[in-house]
Amino acid sequence: MSDSNESFFGLSEETLRAATDALPSQEELDSLVEAVRRGQERLERSREHAEEYINIGPPWNYDPDNYSPSEEAILTAMKWTYEGREYLEGTGDPDLEIIAGRIEEGSKSFAEESDDSDTEYPYKGLHLLLSSLDGLITWLCENDPDIDPNHCNDGDEPVYLGRQKKSALEKWYDEHAIFGVEDDEGDAFREKWNDFWHHRHRIMHGSPYAYYDENIGVATLFFVGLTAHVVKERYDELN
Image 1 (cartoon, helix red, strand yellow):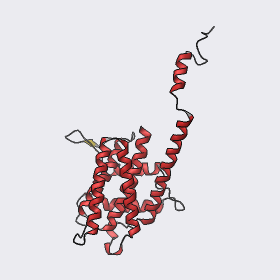
Image 2 (image 1 turned 180 degrees about the horizontal axis):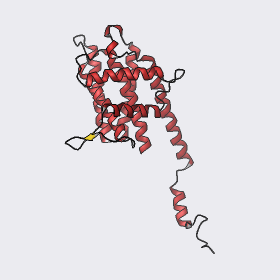
Image 3 (image 1 turned 120 degrees about the vertical axis):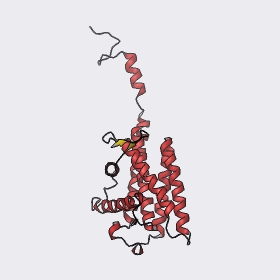
């Protein structure tokens, strides 16, 4: 005969009660579901704005004179970058907070350089923003169980190759439906992403044929904002 103090599962009533008490309440579950829903809505809105306002082509077939971002595109890109930075600061993760500070400095520098008629190209702003973007992508790599570093440098820091970073970001963009743009299933946005990646590669690797115009800067702001949103969602999943 079984012990009267044991449940059907072989657990004591005390253990079972403690386990039950540890479960989240319905109110807590509802709050979590609502937070996830709001997060997905924010990601969808940011993606739709990026789809609408990013106007870019591959660097080998790109003439800056043919591209002039609208005031609305600039303001929208700044807004999403600002909100993305706030999300990173809200994580409490020290590395993400440092990157958030760099995004803030990059955004300010880009705005100042764009407004200054004596500044031909937004060099400082672009480099700070692209460095921040690279940091966010590296964070996604480090927090992806399917991605291992290519090697570690002399300081024992993990090193990821460009193709690993691109693959990681595409994976997590897909995970959060960033590429799932309605009607064309994201093909147009994927093409814009690929074009931007080639521009980013040229700038980060010091190509003499890299472009530093305002239009590339606006596209960078959008992708920094989008990636910050995705990193925040991934952070919440892990915590």
